[in-house]
Length: 243
Image 1 (cartoon, rainbow, N blue to C red):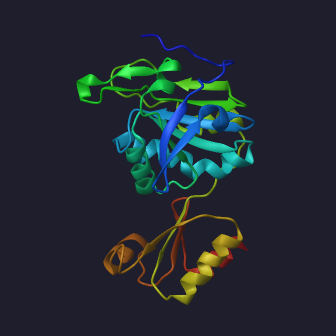
Image 2 (cartoon, rainbow, N blue to C red):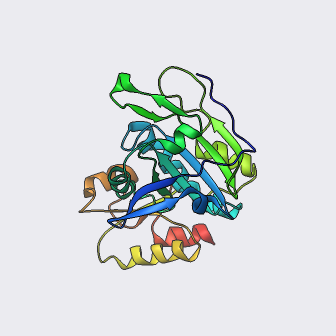
């Protein structure tokens, strides 16, 4: 089939039956997109490999840059039911992304992007794509090429952000090893928070062992802070880095 690029067209008017905070919620697409700029990425299924490991995390991580460049909300759309999407949202811990279930595939079908995945036992699902929607009208679409399998080449967060602003400043990727009750760890986290840097915390003795800390950093003391893949070191090293 040939997928139609719908730039300049209004998005379908449907009602999504969703689960939020354990309750059923009706979300009208007209309300979701009206008066705002929304980045949407749609994918074949919750809990599937590429969707979970790359597609969702990419948009979640770059969300601050999207917001700084005029995007009001980031939406992940999938032809899954409300229960599945709510549980996947919890599993992904992607607080910057709103998960919307297109349970009946109505929105996806009206977008012309509903495909048959019966060979995988999936039934009808969405083709992978992304778009920027401004006040209910599609401003830009990136539709994956019509190739066998599940291509993932143009609907990623990096491609979308580059379209919005090629010079956008991307948030730094920060994680640190800590231990419970460590005052130096608290100091490091405070410095990161003061500079608006989100981070992933790995607790030694809970998430990993001291041996893993030693293997990753060459040290047994905490905190050990990494920024964009580079080991900065402890709290004093982090203070010097920022200075």
